Image 1 (cartoon, rainbow, N blue to C red):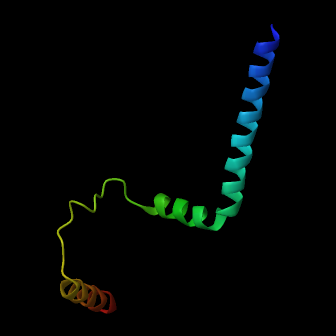
Image 2: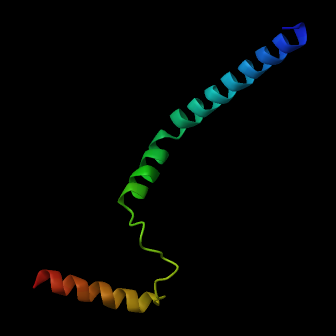
Length: 74
């Protein structure tokens, strides 16, 4: 191996180490936010597409919520 290849290898190792350290810093800094996001993804239904759901006005949503609440209390 020549001097040029050794320098390239060292540079690649340094860059990889810097990327790993940066990733770790982001994970530590945003841990609470990432935990919430991951929990939400785990609870989500992959078969449900919100774009396919019929759109409701806020008034219709309130009426539906009230209907659901009355059904649960019965």
